[in-house]
Image (tube, rainbow over all chains, first blue to last red; front, side, top):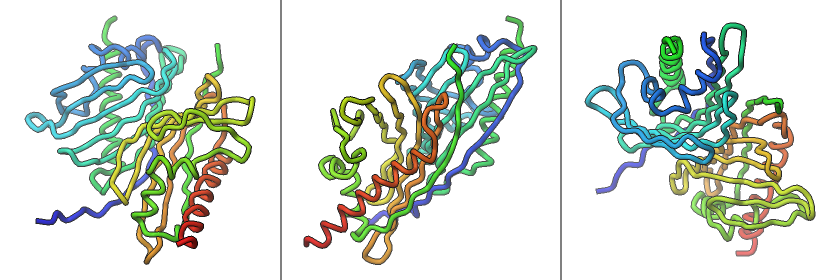
Amino acid sequence: MTAVSPTRSVEHGTIRLERLYKAKPQRVFAAWADSEARAKWDVPGRWVITEQTFDFREGGREMKRFGPAGDPRFLAQARYVDIVPERRIVYSYGMTDRGEPISVSLTTVEFTPVAGGTRLMLVEQVSLLDGRDKLAHREEGIASKLDKIGLLVSEAA
Amino acid sequence: MTDRSTAHATFTIERRLTVSREKAFRAYADPRSKARWFVGPEGWERSDHKLDFREGGGPPGGLIHYYNALYQDIVPNERIVLAYEMHMDSTRISVSLGTTEFKSDGKATRLVYTEQVVFLDGHDHVAAREHGTRALFDNLAALLEHEAQAT
């Protein structure tokens, strides 16, 4: 049997999100750097993470299996490229849905101290593959995660 | 404290290559072939050339430019997505996603390269990066043209 090869396509886009957190950059940065903290927010909405490895350092690679409860169909594989403590994180990651590629991203996260807290700027430059995801959908997912960080860092230290 | 900044940009380069998609992909991906077109400006020396990870070079006696790539998605004859970072000596100057698409155009191939890049701390800028990348694709197009004429 000959498999029908899918129509290949790439859609490039840039997502920009900003949040103001009432916590110091040190604490907001730790939400990314500390594996225990990150496991609490690193998935959109009510989705769940079923498997996750951590290696937060330049050149470090991580994987995360996640999805709706009972259907961990997504796999993300990331590599950290640039880490400036309490200032900046740059990483790239690829994502698959049941083994089929859906996107490759380059994400920049910047932490800036402001009066009363931290401004976080996230820019995700993404290549969406073969029509398996939409930019608006991806943005919604990331926004949900950033909101969870807000809840986490505003908890009493 | 070092002044930290980022600048994000996207640029696209298209080239019509006078060979089939399969040949174009091979020239692009095969290490021996890639060594013939993926080179710095004339006069640069290259060092430690491996397709997979570290590729670099620079003007004789000058700063070393390093190119450190990770392949993220490969569909033979159709698409390559890689993430790469550039260094000047020990300073990281940029991180990029490069998507190369190979599309059949009769007996020829239309190559579309899109780079999504973040420049770090004011090093380098998009005009220079695009200029340098165009030169690489000019090399590739010329090499394939030359080979097509030789056969």
